[in-house]
Amino acid sequence: MQILYFGIVGLILLVSSCQAQKNNLGKLIDCEGESMPINRRTVLTKIAFGSCALETKNQPILDVAVEEKPDLFIYLGDNIYGDTENMKKLAKKYNKLCAKTEFQNLQQTCPILATWDDHDYGANDAGLEYPMKEESKELFLSFWGEPQNSSRRKHKGIYTSYLFGKGAQVVQIILLDTRTFRTPLLAADETDPEHRNSYRPNLSETATLLGEDQWKWLAKQFEKPAVIRIIGSSTQFGIEYNGYEAWANFPVEKQKMLRLIKDKKANGVCFISGDVHYAEVSKVVENAAYPVYDFTSSGITQTWSHVEENGNRVGEACSDNNFGLLEIDWKARNIIFKAIDVNKEIRITNTINISELRATE
Image 1 (cartoon, rainbow, N blue to C red):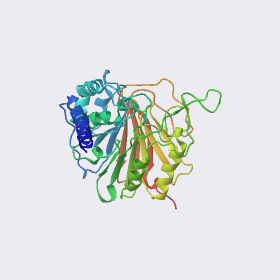
Image 2 (image 1 turned 90 degrees about the horizontal axis):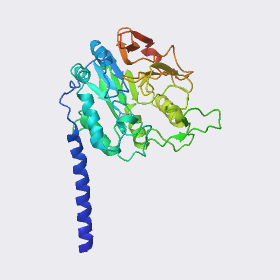
Image 3 (image 1 turned 180 degrees about the horizontal axis):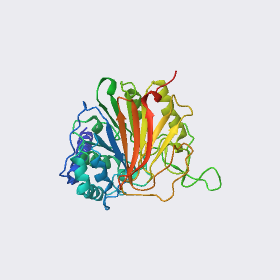
Image 4 (image 1 turned 30 degrees about the vertical axis):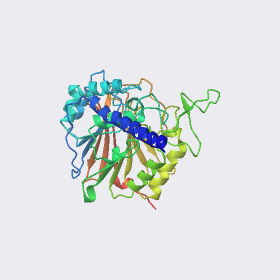
């Protein structure tokens, strides 16, 4: 009995020590600036968003975003390029972002919401196999000022949601976690002409992007009343398969999302995404209750010279640095997506009426 007692005590001390180390991780963040507080009663008319911001580069596109005076700015991932299992190194990269005048100006302009992608999660293209996910989460939540009593701190992963406005002007913002629970990617088979670039689709019914708990949570979010539902996904939802990271690599999960929207009669859904280092609009119609749009903005500092083929693309793509802007015209009941470059030029514009985002059944 004495051996058992000391064994239990030792286990308790070990758990307590690990928890203390985790709690101390937040102290590595030295971000003095604070974003403006979130006011849930705000009627949203301008939502800016972006992704892919290398912390060692200047970020003048943020100053252009500030000039638009958005109600919110949403970071969609690769907010820094961490790529490490060393939390001190990861924290230093967050601190470099925080020290930037452009970022500080954004903090003083509007509330900031955020989710992560692979590089700020901790490793390129990583999913559930990344071993430091809990420690990385602690740094992420500390940097973005997540309250200590937030439900986001009480479950695995960083998924969360917000409701803004009231009555006929309610906007729900859902930020997904496409990293913590995601099944490892399958490498492309170079002998198969249908499998291109880095990865091939995983057709397994057990492969997952969001994980069981996050799916259950999402179903409950779709039951909440809202006129517009903006789903932030770090990787693109609406594109065709191209061999790089996207929902297209998990076609079963993509169809599950479309089915859940239909089953829950979740009208008003549109996606915003990042990751690819260019901007575009994609539109999914097949198996959808209504056209599901995906507005991609990337990157704040990063660019990609080759824009991938995408049969779901609406209009042209923009491969220069850009940020995304969703403007909601409540009188006309329109959502206008704009991709704006560092010269303040509108490179992409697309308007949809809220009435389009309703199931016909």
